[in-house]
Amino acid sequence: MIEQIGQNRSSATEFEQTMLSEHAKKKKLAKGFLNNAGIFVGVLLMFAVIVVVTTDIRLTSFEEIAALGLDFFLLLFVSYSMYVNCSDSGMRAGLQSETYTGGLKAFETLKKHIIDTKMQARLGEFCCHYITEELRNSRTTVLAIVGFSYEEYMEKYVGKDTETIQRDKTLSKAQKKAIIKANSIEPVKLTPEMIMKRGRGSSRRAPLGTTPETKKGINFGTKFVSTFIISLAMSIIVLEAVVEPTWVLIATCCLKLMAVVINGFNGYKFGYENIVFDTVNYMSDQTDLMTQAVQYVEGHPIMVSVATESEADAEAPAEE
Image 1: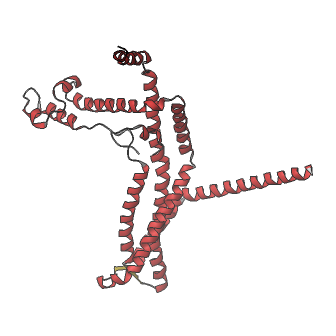
Image 2: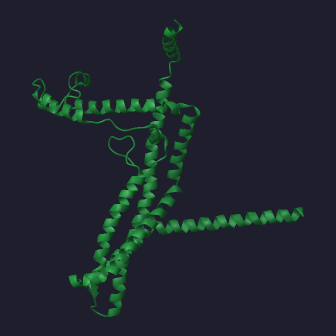
Image 3: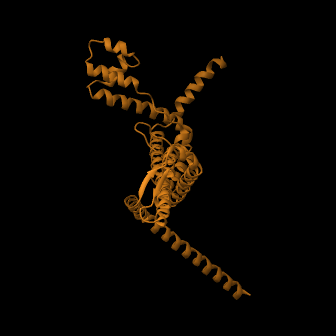
């Protein structure tokens, strides 16, 4: 009986190893295909050139466009669906990449440290500090170009309207322009949720830029418009034979399908980069902010004695 159990376990282990081996082979094959997908797309583009130089290309008349509605919407649906589906496949591949898993591990480790040490309660305080310092640094950078000090700016010109600044004869033209620009700079938005909630972008001033989900929605919307135009163009193209009808039929199909294939390739590329670049960069920015938050909390401990004295003072009148 024991020997039979041992044999069953051995068989199960061999089966698992076989399955893992097959999975690794499939993954390697898929990766090899994707690495050479650019060559495949290049071949299709070359074929498009051959089609153009060996056939007579014309556009259908406006009277015939109405009859091509079904062809157009079919191309639109297939092209856009190919882009979205391949984008999803690219995102899954990106989630399995070492770049993403490494960035996620660093993010989760630091997040756990903040929660375990109860620093999360002071993240709001850090956000206020960061917003204030970022605004100060941004304005100082603008003012330093014209040799104007931030202290003098805060004392005399912060919040002043443009007309008042323009009437000040003690300022040069460049200084007036710098002060007006400094006044126009708004504080960045930063909340504890933005730091701690795992997300994914970057912008010029914002500590955490547009989330990759938003980028994805914008990209899909833009891609739908471009796919609409391409599908319309492809659906109204008619190829007339120079040699024989069979070649024209093949050329027509390949030319129209080429847009679908390229959409699929671009979709996979976008999905992969949305994870490996956008998501990882966003998490990296969050990790940097969490590191700064830890350093801020450690450098600014809560003054328990001061808080206790304040509470005692507040309770003093009640005792009397």
